[in-house]
Amino acid sequence: MDAGGPAQPDRAGGVSAAAVGDFLERFSGGPEALASRLDADVLYRAADLEPLRGRLAVERLWRRLFRSYAVIEVSPVLMVEDGDIVLARQRQTFRPVSGEPFELNSIAVFVVRDGRIVDWRDVFAPGDLPADHEALWRRLWRARW
Image (cartoon, rainbow, N blue to C red; front, side, top):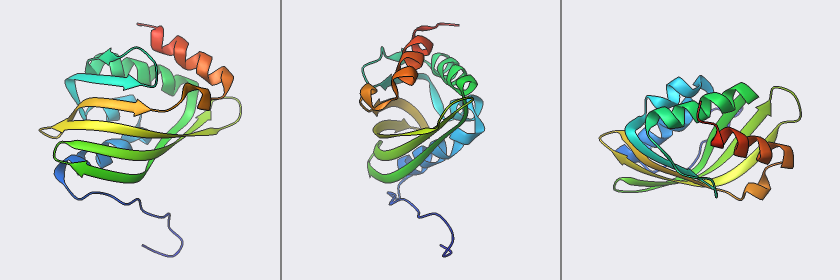
């Protein structure tokens, strides 16, 4: 690492962790880049929101989120792998199209099979979101378009 570069997260060295690391790096590329690492029947759960099933449902949600935020970045702080399960402590940065940016710290649990994420759970307290953003997320999550 060069002296001026960002600190690198502690990462597990296995195949599952590599797939998750690649997925997290794709956040800046938008929902299409994310979808390519998800299994067609992926199960996605975040906080206390209703689970979403299927790559298409997850991609649609993230497409709506990317319309509301100019930048969404996810930086893994620590990743631990046990076979096909990866735990990731991560920092999520959101820069709204208008308004102040904010960060959200979370723990994510991924299950990886054949290089694709089949189960993804983001654990954070919805109260950690600014109030107006919590309402936005709940509205976007319920939308089915």
